[in-house]
Amino acid sequence: MVFNDYSSAQEKCDLPLNIDCSQRPALQEPKPSEHCRRQNGYFAHENQKICDKFYYCVDGKFNAITCPAGLVYNEKTGICTWPDEAKKKGCSSQDVFNFQCPNVTMEIALQHPRYANPEDCQFFYVCVNGDTPRRNGCKMGQVFNEASGKCDWPRNVPECADWYKGVLTDEELYNLENPKPKDSAKDKEAAANRRKPSRPTTTRRTFAQDEE
Image (cartoon, rainbow, N blue to C red; front, side, top):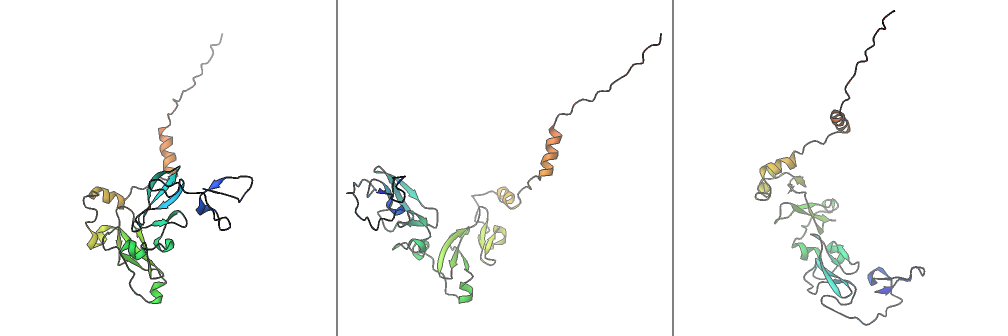
């Protein structure tokens, strides 16, 4: 931990990656422990080829964390980012995804073209500026349709027609594609009124007084 001199009123310690210590580079001697180079902080996995895992250490005790699919740990920011933003050796977009954007014209490149993931129908790659792949995915029940460049239902993509077989039943797929319409505010109000108990109506009877 380092001292945060941004505000003398707070006088608190923070992680080095959150503070500019270029003018105060000296640090206390480290006390390393398992997976923790120092007692506190975020640290990359020891295996440089494992790009999506890192450790968060508190008082020398580690917590192993895995980045969401398609992201890698960025040592400069301490968070998970796209591989091209992390710029970590051995963790480039091509290394992580094992996918390389095809050469295209400048006109196509500026449109950030999309390409199917050859190993997973639910996911696809967006080639930023035509040369930097980023992994994206469709919602559950859908697959990527390379012909349209959009997410679609499996029945419309022959090569992925059975992608969810064994994962979702035909009924579940149908319900995902044909969700039940949500009740409108007017329908909800009408339903609420139907549930309200009605008060019994009473008829007031008047009696004529007998004349003496």
